[in-house]
Length: 148
Image 1 (cartoon, rainbow, N blue to C red):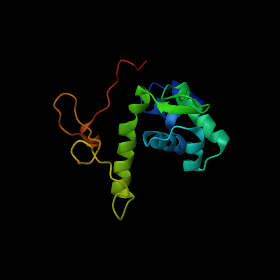
Image 2 (image 1 turned 120 degrees about the vertical axis):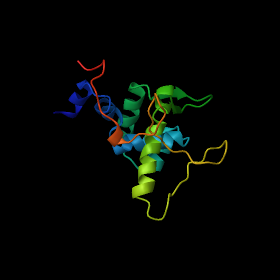
Image 3 (image 1 turned 90 degrees about the horizontal axis):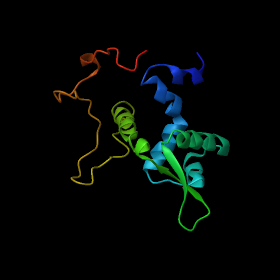
Image 4 (image 1 turned 60 degrees about the vertical axis):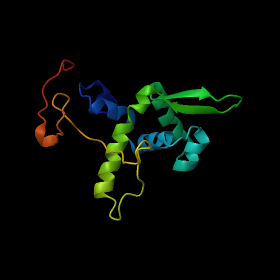
């Protein structure tokens, strides 16, 4: 199956991978959440080729994850996260949590601290009915209304 054909599969895990399934796109999003907004700042932070960066930014804009806008009084465009883009944050935190657990032998290199109380931000998977925490062992995939 070709990569582009994955977008046609009736799967809510597979379809998003077509949009942000490579490391550069996820790293761009990580930096966008960190306040990076301009093309040259992304390029400096990532040391990525201009063409690859432009391709990934264009894809994120096309899918309404980032919006490209001119900043006040500047000739330079800025890339800003949309509401759809902000909804990706828990995915990045889940990846961070996994990395802290399995790939940070000396402890987390960065703590994502809640500004309201100084606790740490983590992703928690829970049942939307009872509120209990669940794992893969507790979940059984069933056909949904979007499956044709």
